[in-house]
Structures are given as structure tokens and as C-alpha cells.
Length: 486
Image (tube, rainbow, N blue to C red; front, side):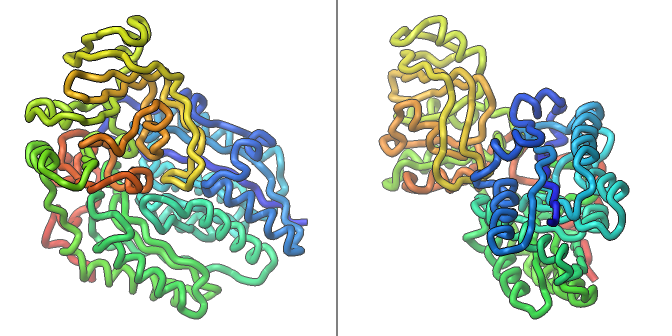
């Protein structure tokens, strides 16, 4: 029986956040080992759930495939990992690995944009350590996020890399199943993967990363074409994470062929060249707060979802910006909803009690609801999560029909249950302020009259030219228009 290790270590690291991510952030969010990993992830709409489902499918098909749970953890996007955090997580993974050796292969879920203070390419370092321990011929298949900054170290120390193909990320479980199926073929000796990575010098701004629409759609149409080529086992496009100031920041294109390194390189090169030739399409002219709110006030297609790009929690932002809400108030537009990370305000509402009148940080209204902040999503949503916890939560209604939600824990708006669980009817609001860019669309599109991306300030603002990059490669289009891709 083939024994395949199953592991995960995922974090999207925004290096512009001054507060680093600690081991405790992971432990408080999700950290499981051994049998607890299976209990936590079985059935999940996530690649780790896909690993487990794929292992079971392989076994049901007659191939003796045992998924051996090792170590899995993730934390909400935030600052770079401290050196201590990275070493403790790495040590935990390696300790669990040692306890179950020998294995015949390893499936590991990584993000691809994890940064540690000690290792800017933290994902590459994890794979390097695994490769050093397991040997050059040992099968290691890793999944990665569509927003990954793929490094050559990651490619060199893995047998195959498989990335998400949708943004919002709705195919994570499928990619985990694909990875399990591929490692089964490798272990059986049916295929010997050859992997190639191309990294043209281009950035893809996050506002242009909605895969169902151009220009991003073209990248994935090309990917689908490559997947039809004879001899191609899998292929991936990563649009990059512009908030990690690391050398490998930017778009990347990867192909895995059966034994044929030249075919893999040709496929990766073809996708990269096609993207490079369309690089001018990846530009977004976005409205600022004043224009966006003014247009929303006049729109007949309500509710208008205003995406607060600069305070994108899914990109690591604090989730506490009031730029858009204050503009709504300034323009006297009624009936808006905003969710703010504000533990102090939530606590003050709890102390005041339901139905009490409060005035907190310039917001005055009546406390309508106090909640434990727990909610469950049953549909496939970005991130593959089902259980959410935004901490003790308070809902305040103002005289202008504004609904202000104060949470005690940062939570990206991936699920509409974040609102529905509080008794709020989002379809009755004129404006919904969502702290994201593309990821919330899967949740909000069913109720949205229209969705508008807004160029707001913050550590996740949409224009890469506003960031002081110190470690990225140069030149990089569009920051250096003269960049060349030979």
C-alpha cells in the first residue's frame, strides 16, 4: 500500500503591515496534526479536503492509497511571519513527518505568497527542507494559491505544482483532488513529471484578477488550451501578490509534462509570451471614494457593492477603515452597511446592551444585535472555509438607516452569512461596503445590483506604483514600462 503524507501550511503575507504574524495567530485560527487533521478537513471545500477525497477515490478505484495526515495550519492574511513563528511551524511539520516515515509521496498545500522575516521565500524554504529530508526522487506535489509569487526554488524542490484556476477561489477542492490523482500516477510509475516555470517581468494589478472577465479570462483560456496538449499533465497560472515585497513578486506560468522537459518549457513559455503580449490590457481606471459614492447614490441597480480595495482584509488589511463609510455620511446617502474590525466598539456595545443608544468613535445609533460572531457557510466560497468566527459582534443602526457591524476578530467578507447570521437583509440596503476586491464576489453577486471596485487608500491599495518596493526584481512592467521579455 502506498502511503502518501498530507500536509498544509498557508499564509498570505503583506509585508507592508507593521505588525508581524506570530505562531499564536496560526494556533488560534487552525492548527491540526494526525487524526485531528482528518476530522478538521474531511469534506472541506479546500485543497486539503481535496487531498483526502482524492486519496479515498484512489483507494476506491483499486489502488492501495493511504492518506497519512501530518500537519496543517493557516492564519488570516496579515504581516510577515516572525522568524520564531516560521521555525516553530516548520519544526512542527518536520516532526510530524519524521513520526510517520517511510512514505511513498507527499501532498502539501502551500500559499505561494508566504513571507517570513528570516526567509522571504518561505514556501520555497519549506519545500527545500522537505526535499533535503526526503531525497531528490521523492514525489512531492504541492498546491498553491492563484495569488502566489512562484519562485524557481519552489519549482526546483517540488515534483509538480498545481495552482487554483478561479478567482474567487471556487476550485480549491478540485485542485486538491487533481494533486492526489497525479501523485497516485507518479507513485504507480505511470508518469515521470518534468516541470518548467516562466516568470515574465510583469505585474498584474489585483483589480484585473477576476478570472471570469477579461483580461484575466484570457490567461486561463490559454491555460485550458495548454491542458489539451498531448503529454501535458497539468499547468498553472499565478497572477501574483503585489503586497509581498519579494524578488519573485509578479505573474508566473508553469507547466508539467510527462517526461518531456522541452514540452513543459514550451508550454510555460507559450502562456507567458501570450500574457506578455497583452500586458497593456492589465490596467484598471478605478473611481475614488467621492465618485463611487456619488454614483451609488444615483444608481437604479441596488444594492451597490462598493469594494474597499485599500482595506482588503483578504490581502492583509486591518478591516477598520472608514474612508468609504465617512464619504457616504458626508454625502448624506442613507441606508448603507459597513463591517468594521473594532474590538473596543464591540465591547462598548455589549456593555451598553441591546436597544441602548450609543455614540462610539463618531457613530451614533441604537444597539440592535449582539452576536457570538460564529457562522457557517454551506456553499463553495473563496478560501474553501465553512466555519467562521469574527468574535463578539455588535450591530448598530443609525438614524440614517446605516447598519454598522463591529467585530472583535478580523474576518474577510467571503460569506454572506457574515451578514445574514446577524438578521440583516443585505438586499434592502442601498450600499454594501465590502472590504475586498474579487474574493467577496462569490458571496455578494447573488444579492448585488452592481459591484464597483473603489480606489481607496491603505496597505492593499490597487495601484502598485504607490508602494515603496525594495526587494522586487527590476525592471517589472508596468512600474518600468521599458521592461523586456526576450
